[in-house]
Image 1 (cartoon, rainbow, N blue to C red):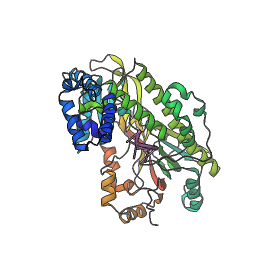
Image 2: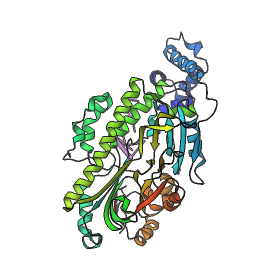
Image 3: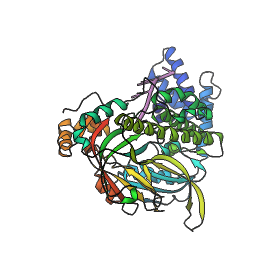
Length: 470
DNA sequence: ATGTTC
């Protein structure tokens, strides 16, 4: 039986679930039916005391009792921490998730960005400040998922005149797909860092090296396009340039770190009611909290290295210089100093899960979709948003719904209209699954100002086995 | 987002 099914029954992950699985397997071997085993479990959950001395179920009963005692110890806080929401018509469930997060004892303040949608624990587009605690699921599954843009010293016309060359470089120098990695390992100084900072990262080093410089799957991409600079504060005079934009994260290693520490956090907080279990935190004074923080920071450097290599290999293959370089995390936690409502300052942990850092003057990238614009922005330093902005257009349709209701034909018309060449992607990533990026930008004019606009032209994403027609 | 499930 899976952990998820057990949790649904009221058996939490950890010692209870492990023992329950053992008991079920034993009952199965003895010829008991699944239903009979389930009935017995329900009965033990209802009154563990009655089974404490039972030879077969005693251990499970004592684990469950300990859990139930701890769970009773949870006392909800008097009032929810203050939060603000940007944008209209956000999924009610995503708002509920933010409210839940703000009801944690460690929460200080929250904010929801206009691209928000439901995620594990904290919604995507959620920002949460806590005191002295880090929440693995408020950082996100893809730790340090980030954006990077470089402006290449090539004329914009190269998109037409050197199209075949750009396509071939994009295909040759990138690596997409779940579990995907390079046969010939790439090199970066992040692999000289100490990966033994935690037992988890120590075990992950080989996989990380294999995947170093790769892009992964889902909404990750590498694309060429045009950058229209409207404000020279971006670092280039006004005008139109050829740019390379990438979206990638910490790949399998980050996912494994997230899985490990979110499970650990949950185990350490059996008192949390089910509605808050995915928001279990790690105290930064504890070994577990410090381990997660070190692992997260290493994943930050690793994700940055992935992007650095993508851009470096492509620029090298094209034999061109880089004229501008912009990047930012959008799934991460930072130690920051923020003001209390009374104006005094305190150190908080700010989690941005699908949110772009937008402190005053901070430059970041907010992508749209494969056929809609993205923007290079400069933060306005809004304290109400906890110095944050949206990280993209935000999904309006689930992946399942997209695959069920959309067709490539619908997408191709839009791609042609926008002069976008799609090398590969899943049907669940076509522009129609995303909200209107310009509406999202309009909803956060108080958070960021636009310095430049990026329009994708040659797009590469993870293939889904269903090649787009040309 | 990831990659494999005792």
